[in-house]
Image (tube, rainbow, N blue to C red; front, side, top):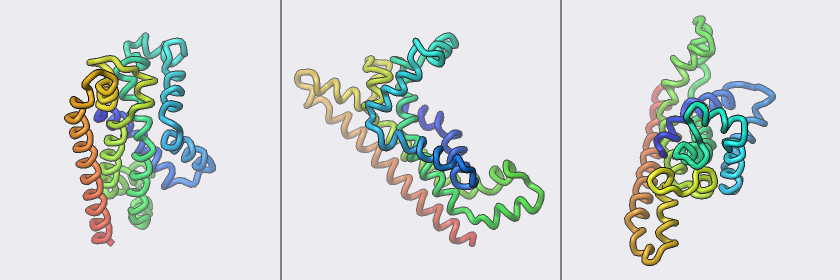
Length: 214
């Protein structure tokens, strides 16, 4: 579910990061505030707002159910919750990666007749992909550990929506569960540690690469 959430948010995170870093639109402040909201709101509030959006009683939730893609109390709900809570970190790190790209290279590309889209695909994205990948790893780790939004939007359905945090919660709520959770804790800590370590290595490599190109 964490991997699906990361892949789902990848194009949107890159597009929003480019908008925030490479445009001077008057709406940038509003977009940046909205992007950061899941990072500062209580996870339960995020989950409740998502539940209101994707509820089968609402227009969007009803339409998704008709097309066979229910979100509320479905494994897709766990994916959506993980994607939303990890999205701010994904955008922040992607924007930092694009910020490190020398603007002169983009100006040269534009002076050679390439448009904004072609310049993004041929210059900005190739030079910033390590930082974007690092952001994906951090977003993956953040989404993997989400509890509050997931349990509100997707519930705790064994075998369908039960993530590692929900499984740990269920074990703690059952007799003798405290002795059984250590494997889940070690797996969770290990995955998050490796994700953060890989992101840091990618960030350092990205910085060295940009410095060598200048």
